[in-house]
Every structure is written in structure tokens, then in C-alpha cells.
Length: 256
Ligand code: CAA
Image (cartoon, rainbow, N blue to C red):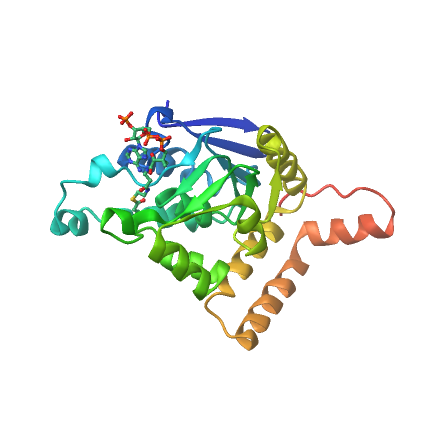
């Protein structure tokens, strides 16, 4: 049984709650180990269609665990490949939604940005305050935030270490939607429920193609998207989805 995360399965949806409330869900090695063991391992499960990652009302996660890192040398950090396996979570094909209440700072903000998109409670606070600790972001903050909100704003966040609220995060494209704090998780689960009714091959192709757009030219991206689109025409779910539309009934997708 994992200790630093709590997992709840609702049919095709998995809710992950970060569970180190005393440390504001600071991300230590154990959290990563349990995410790899209990979550990343489920990526191939055809019955898992969507993941919701959340924290508690005070904190989604207040960053990487400063107490765990503080006395390490550069050699230890490098040889321990500190943080690098978080990319295995980021690269999961199953759609992942971060539902952020409270603080999402440093590694916490980076973890939210590793998800396919972010929903937030109205009191959520995002930031990359590593500069205040004499370091820089180390789990993708300078890269993912810049792609999401642009260079000027990303520079401002990283160089000043300030926090931004949910409204500002919505306006600059860091997050997709805002809900009242108490209703956030319920709404996130409702959205996951909608997503989970669709065809998993098509869902994973959407997340894959959108992420690929970071690294491809428009021309390459259009070609890539078209090849994925064509490949879906050999699936049961494409035939079922289109036939159901014509026959004016609800489709039954089976993930093949
Ligand atoms: N690591 C370890 N412990 C943390 C932590 C973190 N990132 N954030 C909070 N905690 C601990 C505190 O030390 C405190 O523990 P004690 O009770 O043992 O003292 C407990 O959680 C509660 O925190 P506070 O008393 O500080 O709570 P607060 O409400 O006064 O302040 C806060 C909340 C503004 C979020 C403040 O805790 C804070 O600034 N946290 C650190 C934020 C930060 O710098 N994050 C970046 C970390 S480095 C990083 O993430 C690098 C990277 O990119 C990979």
C-alpha cells in the first residue's frame, strides 16, 4: 500500500491524492517511487482512461523536498539522477489532469505542468520560487512553463520567484479552468468521467499529437497528425463512433 499517495479508482478514472500533508506534499524520493510503482505501471491498462492528480486544500505540492536535498552535493544529485524519473510520469500516454488547490510551487508547479492540463481552485497559487533557495527549477519549470505561458512571463516567474493566482494563471494559459475550491475535485472527476467514455486509442493520440507540437514545425506536425488520424480508420472505435452518429445512438467504445 502506498503511503505518500492515496489512490482511488472509479471505473476508468484513477484519482491520485498526494499525501504528505505535514510537509505540504513536498515531493521526496518516496513519492516518486510510489508514483512509478503504482501509477506509471498502469499506463498499459486499457481500462484506465484518465488520471486526476490532486493534493489537499492547502497545497497541491509546495515543491521538491528541500530537507531531503539540502545537504547533497552536485555529484550526488547527478549520480542519483535526481528528478529524472519524473519524466516517466510526464510521458504516460493516459490523459492526466492536475486539479490544483492551494500551493503549486517549484516541483509542485512542475508536476502540475507535467500533466496534460491543469484545473485550479480559485485560491490556487502557482510559482517557481527556486531562485529564493539559490537554485533553479529542476523538473522542467524553465522549459514547460515557457512553452505554456511564453518567455516574458516565464522569465518574470522564475527570476522574481513570485506567485500567481488562478485568474492570472487562466489568463496566461497556464491552466484551463477555475472552479470554487471546494468543488474542484468533484468537477475534475466529472471531466475525467466524460473523457473516459471516449476511445482510448483516440485519447492517447490527442495527448501525443499535442505534446509533439512542441518539437515539430507546423508542416511536420500536420503530417504527423494526419498519419495518426488515418491509422484510426482500422479501429473498431472509429467504425462504432461514426456508425452510432449515423444511427442516432450513443456509441459504445471498447478501446480497440
Ligand atoms: N520541502 C520540504 N518541506 C516543506 C516544503 C518543501 N518544498 N514546503 C513546505 N515544507 C514544510 C515546512 O518546512 C513546514 O515543516 P515544519 O512544520 O517541519 O517546519 C511545513 O511544510 C509547513 O510549511 P510552512 O510552515 O512553511 O507553511 P506556511 O503556510 O507558513 O508557508 C509556503 C507555505 C509559502 C508554501 C512555504 O512552506 C514555502 O515557501 N515552501 C517552500 C516553497 C519552495 O521553495 N518550493 C520550491 C522547492 S525546490 C524545488 O521544487 C526544486 C525543483 O524545481 C525540483
